[in-house]
Length: 299
Ligand SMILES: Nc1ncnc2c1ncn2[C@@H]1O[C@H](COP(=O)(O)OP(=O)(O)OP(=O)(O)O)[C@@H](O)[C@H]1O
Image (cartoon, rainbow, N blue to C red):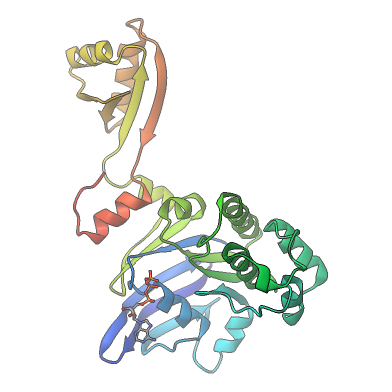
């Protein structure tokens, strides 16, 4: 798959301090990439380097195969929409008037407004908007000129449940049409719901880049089985030499599919009712903790 963005050994310093340190990663076209890392890791700096707000000191940055330098960075920003920190908005204009400033087409404005559920207040002055309404306007402005790449720094900040759902659906809808997203957030459970890939940064260095699917396969995996009599099921599994752990409402079985098949056979051939089987893989929060804390097993 083609990459829209490639970082090659990028280094950014503030004074003598390397804030991005020999950073290499790639962003596949049409993917939703979650950018994760502790406070001060370098996420916003990465976004600002892509947007040309910050220059970088060493390394190379490619957009759609073309090397980006300070001479052509504006070309790339025309194809990119962004919400970084708080949105730049004018309090005495309405949301709708903001779109006019960006000379967006009326059809596109209506489409984005509907996607983000902003119809009820788009003609009101922004001075009367709540924090979340302003945040939505900032997101809408990032999208309005049909960008190829959208960069959203903490977009879920201040959004209520419905607005978060609208944002999630909007990102997925646009990505399905080929738009690429880089989204940073400390709300890992939300990022996990939308991302195809995860890039974890710490101290300006790449910790890992992985697909979300591969991340779920990392570390130990468990199956949780619930029956009408977990204690009896435990005793039967034990008699068959299957190692399991009795939990409050279920039985936890380690590892492989063979174990799952064997366990289910024991349960079903002994007149127990099977109420639930679920799979527990690694989630983004445990992966982040595990890799940031240097290999401690938190799953
Ligand atoms: N303009 C600047 N001048 C000096 N240092 C800066 C500047 N911008 C960022 N930094 C430093 O670079 C490091 C990375 O900051 P950055 O804002 O990229 O982190 P972040 O991962 O986005 O953090 P957070 O999750 O807290 O938003 C921090 O140590 C920060 O203090």
